[in-house]
Length: 560
Image: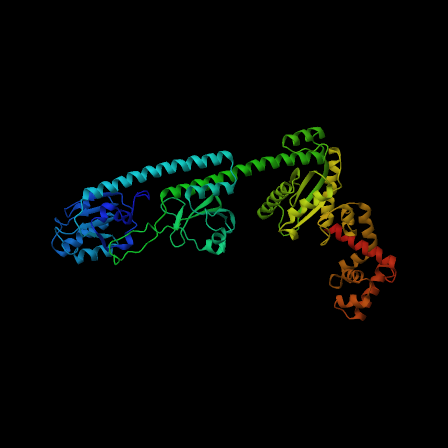
């Protein structure tokens, strides 16, 4: 297969050994960027049978057929085997110009046809082109070796994505962008260009890049936008694209006559850039796998140690020792249990979306700890929450606020953060973790509240939620509301519990409550009277209504 290390017809025509012949393009402008694999001189009409494609054929035309049909067949045979172009020296067979039939056939085939208007030694052209091919191949091999060596070093060093992208841009001398599947830029290097020019309106620009892979590879080039593109991923799962801008316009060729009719056309990027981009993509994919595997193993160890603190499966001294081996100092530190919950109840536990959201949350908690310059153990504690035991450096409240602010950045409405009381001993850490989990559960029923929920912030609904497993609370609910619940069970179309709820939630104001219930005041008053008879209470009594309101809140806690 012809590769991009070979010079193009355009570049060959620009050589001094060709320009001394006063070259003029006659036809086939669209094929000027075809690579020249070899140069072949021939004076026989059936030379096509000896060629393999990619050759630049030189001829004086002495042996070519005299009739139009023979000339047309000669050009068509060359085009069918895939020659790069045809150069004809004038003077021996053709004097003023090549035959019109030859130009028409070459134009139809898209094959460059160039005439030399002065005598030209073909051997000098052959030597110059072959030397160019060998030099280009050697340079390509050296560049490829440098690429492989550099990205092998980056893989071994575990380089960050930004460094990999930077090195790719440096080696290529072209801008490089790493994006995710949502067309968001993860890393870039403008290679000396202005970053704002490169990234302005990136998503829309990226979606216009249509690079079709060539052959069996996955890398493609879009000549319209000038981007070379390869996917980034491993194990059958792509997670991004790596793009390299090659706004190549070919080398500017000088011609003796201004009416040569040539214009600069885009050329495909050289093979070494494809190799470079694919090696960079492999390095990025490998780095992500290594980091994920390392983080996955580390997170498992974190989970083991947190579980050991909660269920006493390991001695506290061993937990401290293992944590220290992970670089987390838990002794002689202020320890605070934290639980971070997802507020979105639609992410069902155990589903693929729920598991993905929990993994993302665990990543976010770990990242927030690092950015807040704090350390600690972090791990999922159930299907909807991530727990952490912070080993606070400095003052407790500022450390928690910094951690929470970092974590909530861009996702304030999606997270609930709860913290237990700070303790000074690892033996007391379980109490802080359990308290944080209980506060997080209670705070679920509080749509407002502080950035970090703590036990003093838990209101009556939260307190009742903490006590929901207490049998005495269940007995209280049944004693206060049992008769009304029994009535509603027998009369489901005329349930009275909603009437009682709206009455109590509107401060026992009957007129306002009637409007909220969308009932006339007489109808609403009649329903309140029935509730009084069923429960045997006086709804004008503040104490009786307080007990009923607490019972309603407790029932909500029991049910949710």
